[in-house]
Length: 522
Image 1 (cartoon, helix red, strand yellow):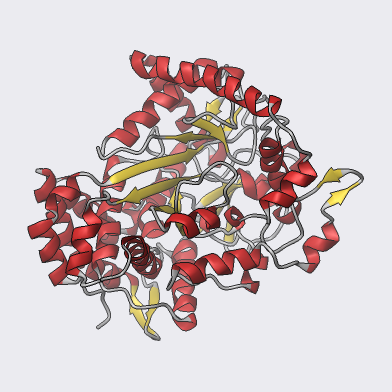
Image 2: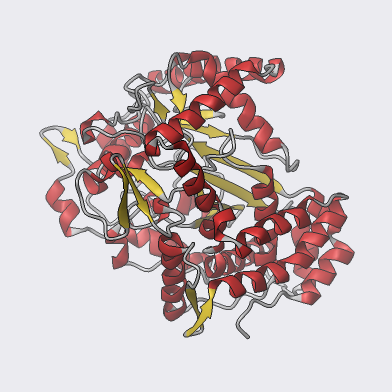
């Protein structure tokens, strides 16, 4: 059958025994945005002191660059809380942004030279230096332009008390920790089978500023205007080969069939030398260019569409955390910024993600094969490059299937999950999210990428002008709204406390950076 099959017994069991747990799904969002000046260039201003320490602030840090702040929401079981947190953090940030705006698009603004992308600075502590050197290494390996691309990461988990009861249903007699990890990996395998849905629906980067290409040719791209290139049917250039890419990662395979195999593969990648990275050098003239010359400097360099995660302890690596406690939550990484929403993600997208991820959990999940992995990658590539092409076909079990019908099949299978969430939460928002995206399936122009191209054409101002106008509008909106004084005080206090915490870390440093790195990778 060329469509997914929901496990009706699992759905029925959850409906009868675990529906209350579905009112307590855990969600958190990490949202990146470039700081851009009024003339459209990347900010050269340091991370404002009023925002606190990027090393230790719980709500506001930086990603690759000083000009790329990352907003972090607390974990919440209220589906509307993440967007409210993002709203409040935006308002707090705009108190100290002068004439800068937070860029509303995933693909960057006007780019000049690679060296003009300022690396994030985390202070003089060993952990701060490590974060900085890691980013320097990314610049040497892939170029700094690639690191200015922004997106949204969606963190999702079920409440702890869901799992013991669900384990009884699955007739699993092993350790609860191992059962939870196996179920989350099953979710991830199904996600990878169908994650092309997300760039089709929510990809919002079909056009870019010409300056990003630095004169390079791109077979996907066509001239749109003097300053803009577009992919005629593209949905997410951010997720294409023009965006995040790591050719060295083709040298190893990450498998999601078993948590130990997953961890072992990542561990091997961060310990396997790469010839090109060795040529770059690690410590040159007394300065670190990269943390090491291996396929991955650290686990986070693996550009995954989704990751199994666990909150790490101080000094602990992500793979060590997974070994220690198993999978705690999953991180969805395939989301462009939504340029039509002031905080970068709309509520209906959050609702849809909840339905989609629960669907991936409740559906049967066979182990992955290399052939299937290749098929999944090909489908994703087709959708990010040509997703709005009317006759686009995907591959399923070596057969060519039309994207439109295949997508509708999946949405139909997801509907009982949406209805289950609606009933548990006494709402209609989950079914409504499916109705909204169903319109996008019927008409590619209604997808976010389709809307982007229509609005871009109407603006007659090219990529930079269009996205800057959106960004400025959102800044004005945030500045005119009443401020949540409780959270404003919370963020201000966290900023002060984070600076003090960074100072304490730096004052208590006892070993050299060389020794710190050696201990970290033992």
